[in-house]
Length: 223
Image (cartoon, rainbow, N blue to C red):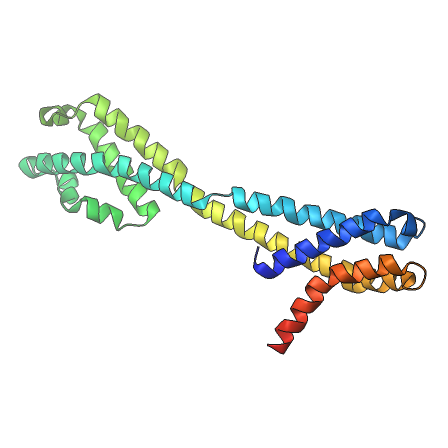
């Protein structure tokens, strides 16, 4: 949340606490009770959703994906080079196409393109496993590449999914604040006039709590 939203939430919390102290004053007035119930619901919605936003750790997922990418690319380059040599010496055109495979070329590709090429290399290693033994590449290494490819595949979408999830939750917070504004400006501020004469201390405390935002808005307009 930004500074203004934090200030507004703090104000709403202070107002909520004021209402708790003066519950006996307004408990028989249904519109006020309903508005306060909605106020507390929106406060909880905002706090809970903010916790959910903070729990979406995009950076950690990105680092995890990068590590999985490295674990896949390193053996891919090794096997692609061996396969190219096999292709060059045997005239196998399918294998000769691997000539340009390098760490740099793989890292420069998009996630999906890197995955597609890694799968292609994996398919060729499985097809030419017998030939690769002469280069010190055994079934265990090929199996490890297979696992690395699957691990990378499972991770490439997660950071983007997390970014989308965080944006959606942030949008939800904005909607909750819009609802909070409506509760105050369209209902509570007007309903509190009922207590200006009958419960001046209650009315005064409410206005004091609300002034956190009133003063901030006034200062913003002056600036």
